[in-house]
Length: 248
View 1 (cartoon, rainbow, N blue to C red):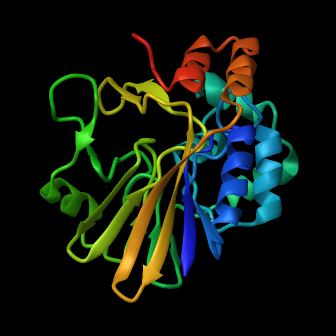
View 2: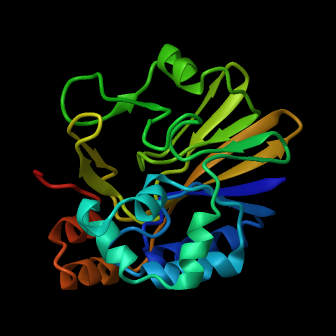
View 3: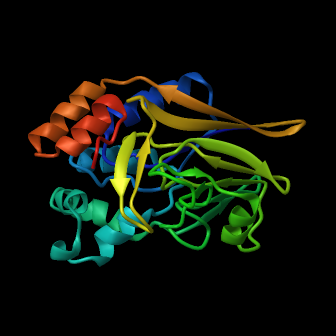
């Protein structure tokens, strides 16, 4: 059994298309999507149309929740741009997405942690500087809150990681569509991969257990960066072109 885990597409259609072509070459039996699918100054409607056509198991991220629950003057620029692009079918699709999802083979999908779409399961902001670091085992156990599965897929931080804890394979596949950003929750921090490549993960069930490969895929990232610039988002253009978040 070979499963592709995708997360944090953020409306980056050419990145998603490149990942889709790559995972098909690898013979993946299933694709699962961990949320934050559309929000950003790129191609939210076109991305939604592709995702709805594929009909993959998908959970809602914090941006899906924000799109559905916040008024326009409460939304950030990325969500406001996205909301203005969507059609009725996409709104219905977003509204039907669950916060978590259990699949066959004892696989659990969430966006942040099983308890919260904004809680980073595998990252800690307790260290020095602006960059997140790997969370301690105690932190991860506390965030899991007793939830157990053979595989738990999470996203939100855009940082690719794979680790084993208490017999569970924990995987953040990284972001398909955005390789750097600044955020101020729960405190100000910067995420950077240092590369514009799209990221995803391939899980494979073997006789010895689950194994995970973190995959990096090139795509026409300058095209995406140019689109962000046309929409007045130089911060996104920098992140898309170089995988860097700048000085904030």
